[in-house]
Every structure is written in C-alpha cells, then in structure tokens.
Amino acid sequence: MKAKMNLKELLTMSAGMFLISAAVYYMMMPANLVLGSLSGLVLVLVNFIPLKVSTLTFILNVILLVCGYVFIGKEFGAKTILTSLLLPLYLRIFEIVTPNMESLSGNVVIDLACFMVVISMGQALLFNMNASSGGLDIVAKLLNKYLGFKIGESLTIAGFVIAGTSIFVYDRETMVISMIGTYIYGLVLDRYCDGFRIRKKVCILSGKYQEIQEYIVKDLHRGATLYQAYGGMGLTERMEIATILEKSEYGKLLAYIHQTDPSAFVTVSTVNEVIGQWNQNRKW
Image (tube, rainbow, N blue to C red; front, top):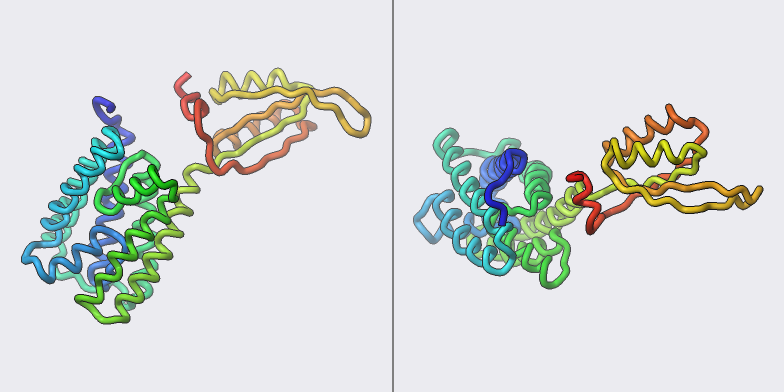
C-alpha cells in the first residue's frame, strides 16, 4: 500500500467524488430515481430509517468499505477510505446549502440522462485511479476481480437488485425507469472507462528509423520494436518501427515524423488496453 497519495491522485479523486455527489443530490434524489448504486438503496431505506441521506450513506459505506479492504486489496481500500468519506461529506454540504432540492429540469427523463453522463464521468475518474466511490462500486470491483465481469456489467447486476427495491416505496413506473436507467448507466460507464484505456499503435516505415526510434525512446519515454520488412513490389529491405502511445504522445510523434521524414509510411491502429511493463515506462 502506498504510504501516501500524490497530489494528482488526491485532486482527481476529489473531483470525481464531487461529480458523483452532485449527480446524486441534484439529479437522482429530486427525481426519485433508484438507480444501481448505494445512493439508490439509501433513497429507499430513508423511508423506513429516520436518518439523513448523508448519515445513512456514511454508515453503509463503512460496512462495504471493510469488505473491499479485505477482499480487493489494501491500496484499493486506502483510496476508497477517502472517497467514502467525501461522498457523505459532499451530500451533507449540499443538504445545508441547498435543502429540499427539486428537479432541475422537471422532466424525469432529462434528469436521468444528465445523471448518467455526470456520474459516469466521476466513476471513470475513480476507477482509472484504481479507486471507488464506495458502496456498490466495491461489489462491482469484486465481481470484476474474481468473475471477470466488466465494471459496467458488474454494476448492472448489483444495480438491478437495488432498482427493483424501488417498488416498495414508489410506483411501477419509477421502478421500470430506474431499471432501464441502471442498464444504460452500465453501458455509459464502460464507454468512459474504455476511453481512458485506449492507446495508439503506430507502425512506421522510414529510412530515418534511427532518428525516429531515438525520439520515441528518449523524448517520449516509450519503447519501440524494430522489424525487418521487405517490400512486396520491389523486394526492398527496410526497417519498421512499432510503438504504442497515449493519444497526446501520438500527436507529438506524428509532428516529429512530418518534420523529419515527410515521405515516411505510417499506419495507426487503436489498442483498447495495454497490460504489463508499458504502464511503467514513463518512470524511466
């Protein structure tokens, strides 16, 4: 477990939790949307337990946090301690500053769409840092780690159970909207998470391959693999460079190639995920 989080991780998780908390308080709660989250369960339970939303959220988060710390890992648990405290803290601030909030749009469908976009952005920021907002996110991580489900699929499975409980408090229309919203929310979250992992695989045929290789290794701090290639038409022997880059690095490399060898032949493909030493190369 890391002794302490760096400033970037702290700010990223704080921003993610702010988005999640705002989506819950200003979009989900006024519209009575019991979506696949701990907050959805809390909206049902507050009708039977005389506690504030922020207080009940804190209690349930602590219970699930212990499970996450034991079964998922110490690093995940340590980061989630912060986010689990931030969620009820933000909710309590919202309760004080803007009590008795009503729907921002007056339309449950618009509230649902806005909620899914905002909360998925927040969730994706947290999962990208190997953290969680607590609650059902811990359940989702457990399903992801031990059963191989995607994060969105895991949240959908757990979320359908929560959405179904809305029938005990609200009408059937609310339950149906909540279940549909839970399913779409899982799809949107997977799309956001995939966006963080997408990389570019760049293959370059150039007579100045040595200069390009040196730029990739020394300036971009990425690895490069060289292959001997033979042209199918003239059987000319050339060297091909292959490398995998982030989107910002790809733009820098492309600009360098245009400057160094405008006649270079470049092919680019999308890589959905990279696992292994590549993720540590920026520390060289």
